[in-house]
Length: 99
Image 1 (cartoon, rainbow, N blue to C red):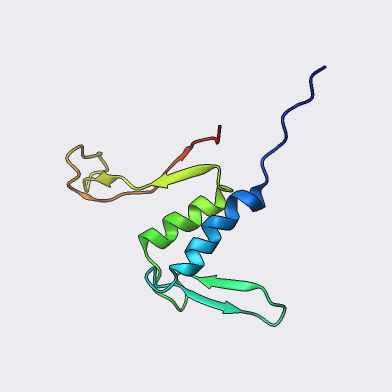
Image 2: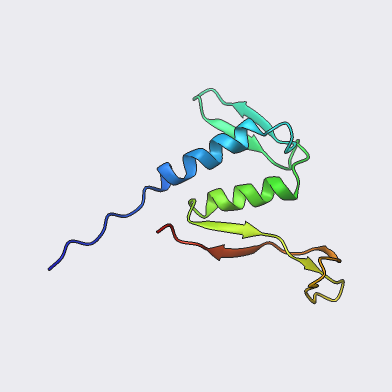
């Protein structure tokens, strides 16, 4: 029986996403601190403002680097707009597996 392919390392896939989030923390309006144990804490909406782009990036980290999150424009009634006009809608998650 053939050996199954190795599973992706979630830590390896997420590391560049987390590094970019921390690098861009100021522009994303995030608060970044370290606690007594040395753990890095990212505040995206308690004391810091955060925002849609910060949330989108954090959602991609939560997907383990295996998917992308994109926002869609919606009308007030919830219908999608093809023209791009409308309000930001709920983020749409689509897994795009690495080849």
